[in-house]
Image 1 (cartoon, one colour):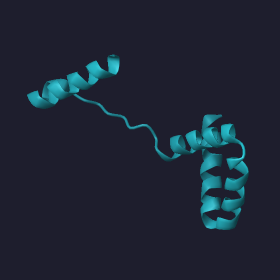
Image 2 (image 1 turned 60 degrees about the vertical axis):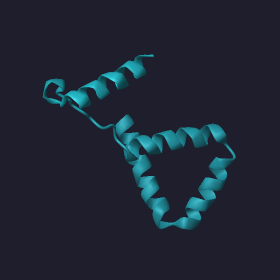
Image 3 (image 1 turned 90 degrees about the vertical axis):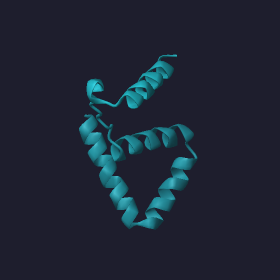
Length: 78
């Protein structure tokens, strides 16, 4: 279901990029419904920017980078 929704959203974004008047009308309509605006922005951001996968091997990192990573992880836990 998520795949279909994202695919549909991407296609709608592409159509709106080609038709500025249509985009302006939809933006004006959605602007009047803040909860719809927020949800569409979240979906658009997720479909445009997939999560980055980062696989780090701490043993192969330089000492300074390793310390920085540990500090960032500690801050995230707080």
